[in-house]
Image 1 (cartoon, rainbow, N blue to C red):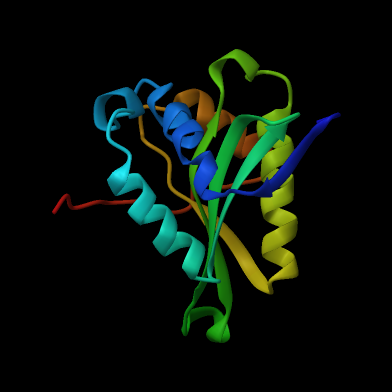
Image 2: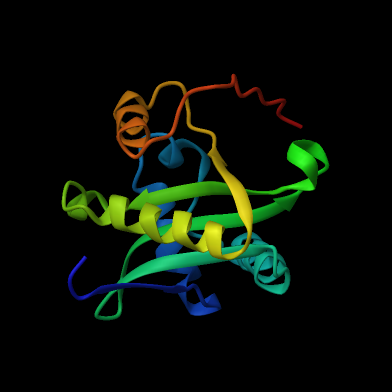
Length: 150
């Protein structure tokens, strides 16, 4: 990731982050770039909560990737903290350059630094390439994720 740095996202990054979410086969069906108010409200909630860290990959001022890291307390595993990785995106024009791996290495290291004992994520069942990527990083498909739209 030479020349690229991970940094905390700012409100000014929201439009670029949304563009990354839209630049994705699944995101294109559920995200919209036009109206930013809901995204800005969500950003403000994330930014205000120290358990959440929204980061971007910054290449000389250009946002080329993002993920959200959340630290979750729980009673299981002896009251351990766990880290949840969500909303991972790398700009389609920049995929295959090791940027996603670098971003994940940052998230895993940050999770460890914050005291988490496990890092978890969910991934859409249709994302077979992503599954191979996560497995290459050492993630194991140990559970079945389920969702209920509200």
